[in-house]
Length: 412
Image 1 (cartoon, rainbow, N blue to C red):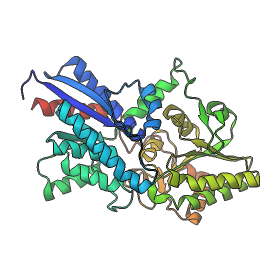
Image 2 (cartoon, rainbow, N blue to C red):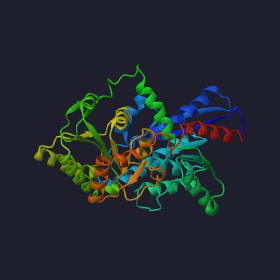
Image 3 (cartoon, rainbow, N blue to C red):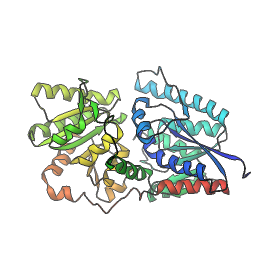
Image 4 (tube, helix red, strand yellow):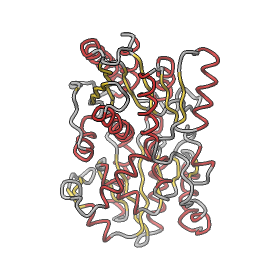
């Protein structure tokens, strides 16, 4: 490759997890652009596909990122099933137009979102190389998580540079490479989520950081605003809950019932803080739970609209433990020394379970209830899940490794 030619790289993010995990790599690549130590001239751009536009505004402010390219994904259908097809079509079309005009040398994507899948396909159709952060994770069930398991498999077929978060994902890609993909490169780098957590915790703990624009959030279902930081200072021991997966929409009713039973038993002792996702199917169960709380005058379950990233870090750092079906939170909780109960029947992030830092509790009410009660009432069981010296998802250097590999790849 001509050493004087600009190496153009587009970093893609359109959802909250993508922002969090692409950010540290983008930051390291910008250093290559500025320092030019590799002997090449790099040009790094940030693309926000706006798949979750309203959930990424606070991230752009917090990480001080101004996107170079932004997609317009307005007027999508309300139906969740039709929305997948409509969003996918529009992202593929707009990405294809952008890549054809800008002609990047590498499109760098993360994970298994619709944005990642469609931008990878757009690049493939135009013979542009694809780099994949957090490559190789699998549940081996095409419907769980849905549709992410399919997305990550599709991406693996077209990516040339694969950056794996763990040894299991590395072995998975090496096995797939033997079968049908010889011309790709797999690198075990660790998970970039740890890089971002390290950066973010230091930032919010700095005395110069202002919570002014982050502390206020809306309570779900009544839209009243509350200073959540002030509430945390006054609140009792609390359990943090998140649930949003499409395949768990019905199961959320089981989670809600278990929470109601436990909250009733521990009034005045334990509070549940539920971060309610935008997914309308996932909201139904919590809306019903909210109504039940009003009827029973139960005050130790709080519902909040999707909490901004720095404030959510504060919520995680100060909670008793976490119940979630989120993949990212499974990785973040061990870094913060917080036990995590995984509200799913399967998980592709098994390292936390193997290290004893997480437990897969399924989606049945009696199992959810029993596992939450176990951590509340059994001190030894709770303490067995707190192992500060174990970090199964990375050492905070993943982004540096990824940037180095990209630099060396184009140098070659």
